[in-house]
Length: 401
Image 1: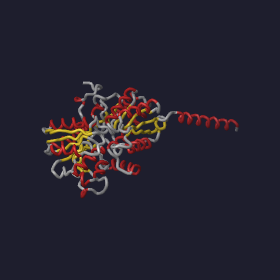
Image 2: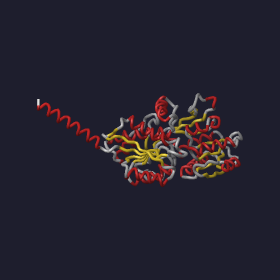
Image 3: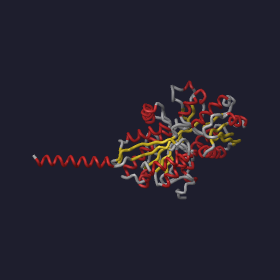
Image 4: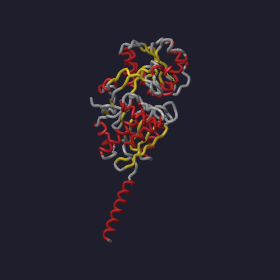
């Protein structure tokens, strides 16, 4: 009897030791640097943090015996603050990977910190083409969209419809400048003309002087090279000025379903826009979006859907690699196609660009919509190989030519 008891006691001790060992492993921390309080909060913000948490939960909550922990911070749209947060997350909080990073200037700053520490950073909300060109890195992934694809899909479609003279309202920072430049290239190559442009500060409340310049240009299209609250305000004020009724077309070069919801279909109807994702595309997108809505009370933007997809892809790679070492994990991420509700046969190239299909949408008339969030009509699906910049044109030093 004593032998049996001692055997049982030894087994209990062994199990306890195993459990203590598992509990002793530090959590695997993934850090989001987000706009929680300003003009991009609806696009990324708390919704991106929630998407990352959903991905961690769906993965089982742990990997390699380590509990997955999602942390997030608000960068207030300040590049220096984003860099400081990234530094603190890596150096003091034990974060292994950064996700989203919300805006382009903040992404460029945080990306440099990640590169210096050989850590993986996955950009979902930022759009600047520089992130997979001059600012590319061996562990940098640009996942959802970029200024080249937005310009290529929207600009090309507009010029083909005869909308061949443009004037730009541009947010005066990296993303806006790149979006104007990339769209200008598409317009000119397609035989169109650019009649002028004006730059506005980030987070502008009054667009009147800028819109009057655009109106006076007589351009067929006023291209909005901005995003979030700036796009919403510019479109609302353009409607108040009667610009659309006067025959000019306003084209948001980056707009999300949350922006269209804020503007309202009465004003937004007929807008042409490019997106990487839409909640109502198919059964898979609807299933994910239903779960997201239960938690966030609004449909996911492409950036937020991209956070879920990219965090899941990262966790699968960690499990397959058997380590969190950046080189080993990134090797698996680049070798493994992405097939989920967000992308079909998506692939991360050597420059860090995740190539996937893009979509051209027309915003519905109020009479065509069945209810809130039923905002888009699909006009075209553009293969990733056509939407995104080719490797031949890449300025990323990692690309062999």
